[in-house]
Image (cartoon, rainbow, N blue to C red; front, side, top):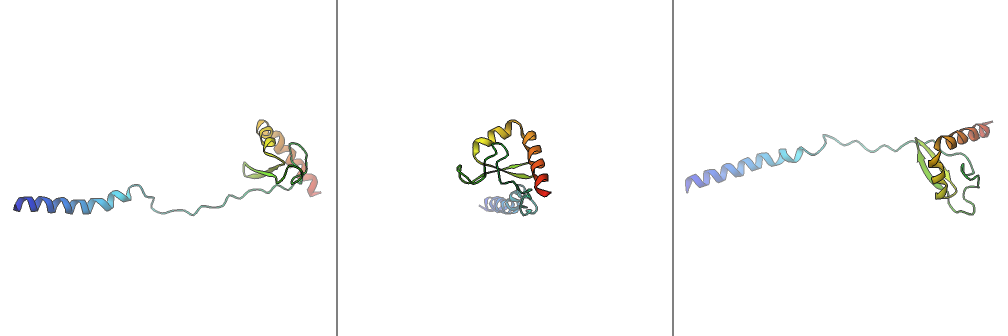
Length: 102
């Protein structure tokens, strides 16, 4: 009976020592708080794709994030057209914003 108690005690002791260490393996040392992504706001009052007024007949504008900037569309279907030629529309937004600044 004595050898059984020694083996059992050694097993319990080793389990107590290994269990906390094994749980640390998958946990990062510390967590970083999620930082809010800073987006350049969309300053135009119209949809860059269709030219329609935002918040008009189509309802609330559809907001899309693209390369650190916010882009608003009159509807979700304009997003498909934007995705086909995003550089074209980003240039159009930049030109329109320059005109607004003057």
